[in-house]
Length: 52
Image (cartoon, rainbow, N blue to C red; front, side, top):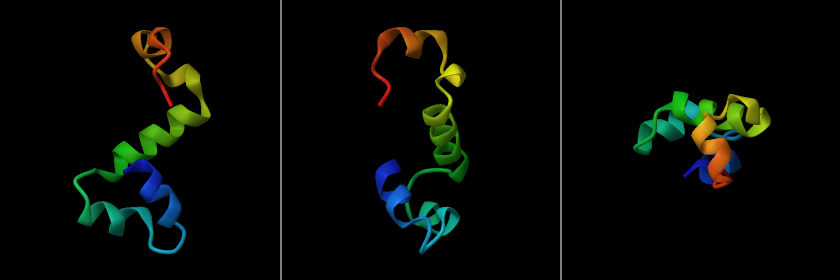
């Protein structure tokens, strides 16, 4: 779902996409922030090595 939003956010926008999908815009922005800055990940997530 995040990948879909990423692909179309420049043409459609995050909020309009999220209105149609079961995801809050804040969830998308949080995911993107953690992808850019892994220090924001929880200790548990960081240890598991399962973050995309």
